[in-house]
Length: 294
Image (cartoon, rainbow, N blue to C red):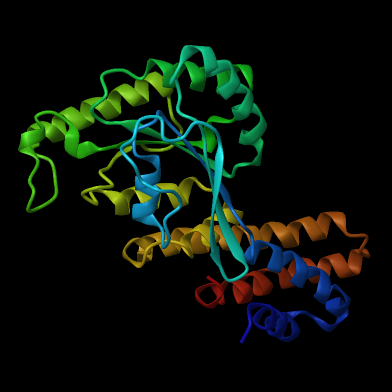
């Protein structure tokens, strides 16, 4: 059964007869969320592993992974298609690649950031300083007024943190000394950027702490975008906690749709009362379809 038919059948069953004239309107609003195509920005210097991180998490590669210097000179869009949904990544140019071109990069950020659901900002765990990242972040949040909740910071290449020879190859995890150094790096990120969301140290190459990062990612996404992103994840990272977070977000989005209709549609007081009473049943019924929708 198609997604549209599932939603239509549920509405037919649970929508009070007095609200049947709203069937098509509600169905259209719900389908817009179900088929929503998220757009996620990728920020960070060239070589931090933006593309390799996303390639490790999602079902299809978004960009060729290369060790060649300056692999991304300008903003590039990459799409993953699954059914009627498209997941788009905007790979933004490397921060601080050359001082002369930083102003050009800033102009691109100002234009593109409002179109993104979230920005994943990738930092190298073994890098000594992130001065150019800090400058750009300050510009975006203070001068452009961009919301800090829209940024998700992640430390990549945790396997390269000193002493790198201490990395446990068999367990694909850091030594105790490396863990200490990684925590110190996380503390520095917290102090330098004051991020809203937790900072996770990962290694895309070693699949280290990717599950934890995915949970943080899905939690950081807007409610209307989280389920569509989950549908594109590698099966390994589509865990019960991740699905639960996305399902709750979908529930909130459905609730917001009905609340908006209650406040905005020119309904009589009687019909508004009927819709208010029916809202909980409607939300629960639609949310119960989540596993078939995503």
